[in-house]
Amino acid sequence: MDKYIGFYIEEPIGNNEFSYQYRKNKKIYVPKLIKGNFSNVKVGDKVVFNEIDEEQEISAIGLEYMVMSNLDNKDIYIFDNHNHAFYFWIKSFNMGKFTKECKLVHIDQHKDMREPYDYDVDIDNIDDVFRYTNNVLNVGNFIQPALKHNLFSEVVIIDSSYGFELDIEGEFVLDIDLDIFSKDMDYIPYDVKIKKIKQLIKKAKVITIASSPFFIDQEYAIKVLKELFNYDII
Image 1 (cartoon, rainbow, N blue to C red):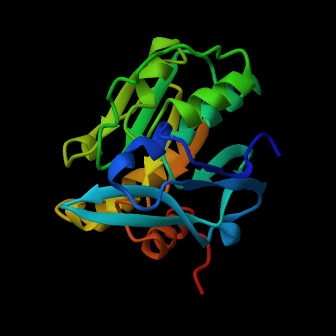
Image 2: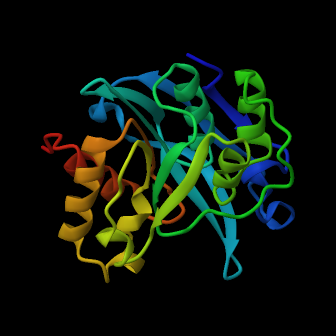
């Protein structure tokens, strides 16, 4: 399914560039994309993000699979590292799932608005989009290219109490990072976040969701994900 067949990145590119020269582990895994539902969203056993933090090497285990699902005729893509959203935005646009230059609503602990090294990608060529997503982009710089190539007219960032009070009008793609539920964001009441995100889910054209294993416990992230979509938690 697509080019996401499950593979390793071993060169210092994309997400594997972080602290590469100082790390013992020199490769990260990119999971296979499958069609499924929320029951298929599980923690895997492979390192998908590696970074040195306070002189300690942290090897973050990601999802077993990326999952493409559909709810109420709405495409939902669930993955671990957030840069993959760029690929799925382009894929969804090419399938006619949303209008070019609509809004992007980005819910995240981080703004993710850093500039990539370059913007050299042919968005009409999905193979080149795949290359760019995995070799150039990382978890902090995937939004600017979407704006640069006019995929979205603007980005509405929800990363604070103020953001959760915003009224979003018009057509939009919803991009959720589950690290908005990390301990660092506990100053925003849990119920406030759940209620607002559920409202936006109903209105969104397409939904991309990152589990961000470097920033939040994955079992907890999956639990929150299922609550957001009212999926039965046993």
